[in-house]
Image (tube, rainbow, N blue to C red; front, side, top):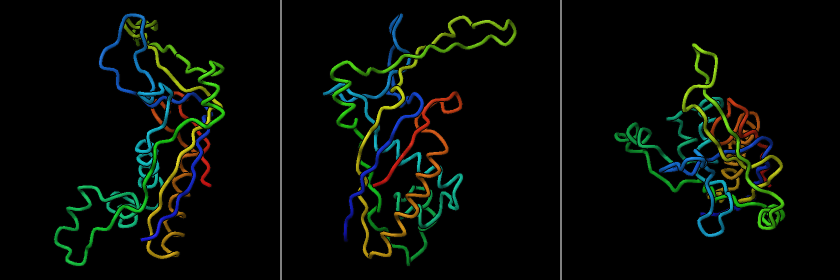
Length: 201
């Protein structure tokens, strides 16, 4: 099996929040922090988040669905898909074609974070009491976000057998990226978070 490595760049256009999953929140603390590398404490984008979002968009807005052979071959078969193939003697499970690596800060932005020129931002949101039209008791929450203009860079490993297959895989991947550029990454997209510009090189 042949392999091709593609570089992917994600530029943040509006504050990005991919949560770390806080177990407990201290008084005055952040309710939902962004995921960070445990060693460098710098934010990153998990490859699984990017892969899952692109796959979801292809299935919901593209010309594919959850049991599509192409999607399950390229992104990996789901348990539901495998159930549909249980009695198919001609089905042979092959290695997943697309492997998404975690995306790290671009070299320039990593330096800026380490020098303190860029920091994550904290956005306070409120929950409105619908009857009173005022802030609901306990409705304040603070969300940590990666600010606009920050860039992340990573790699996508493409496994293929023939050059024609590689072109087909890249075509589907580019379709998904185009859908993502018109959607959002991470959480709270309906509130303006997570607009991104993604380029595949």
